[in-house]
Length: 359
Image (cartoon, rainbow, N blue to C red):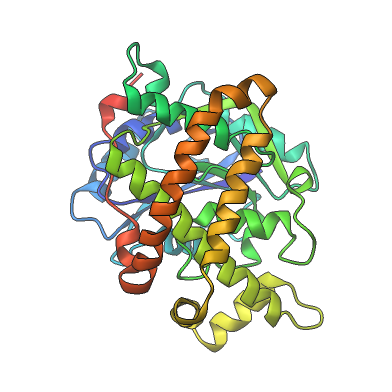
């Protein structure tokens, strides 16, 4: 078996040693699996690349069988996780990789068998293309949680209720599936787009997350939750902006499918014909689209996730749901403005601290 990790890192020099040491402690790094790890420091202004390389070198010095490991660091001035994923799959990674893992540079693992559990979950479900574990926010371990900590935790409970969830901090995808397409340039939430390609079999079937997404229910990773008010607001704005941009792409790609093609084929064809097609699509849609329709879809999605809760949880989560719906109305207007005038500001630099993820 051959697996490959793709990590996008931007200005994470403080936290990336903790993440890498936690990752390298996973059982797959001491098994007979061929492992590639590709860290791409994208548009960094600090020593992320150097610190990552130093951590890799220290690990390899202590490894008994380094010949089956390929651990590399690349630097690029091009920002964006999409760019990192596309290069990992189509350029940096081995062309016969069985499974790709996409991992953020600011998470850690609670046990040493998380990666193997995710592989097992996907192998046990032949029709699934992707799988995820369960994310745990660092505030879950705080003895005294403040108001924003509690809001953050309650939000997680609602968001994780829906079936077939994928979490962008860490997920696994089959190699053949990922090699069949590219992430369009303007997509800002890779996991949402990848999931859509998976659950619809590249827009050729109705959504079927139960069939196309596997879950490693007993595996967990730890990440630093956004608990500062503006970080929470910016995250919600990014989610709504991302959905608008995603939906424009899905609709357009479906309209371009020709006989014998699927959405993956269309992306490859369009990119070859015009590398800027994604940017031109968003520029055009910003001017002509009825974005209020997207707002209604966001509202329906939140309510749908809440409905998947048990009766008791529905009652306890109802106040938070009402708060989220009220906040959505404000964030939605801001999301429209940002997409129209300054899409680069959708992502903010919210670097995690090593202390929050230290075990």
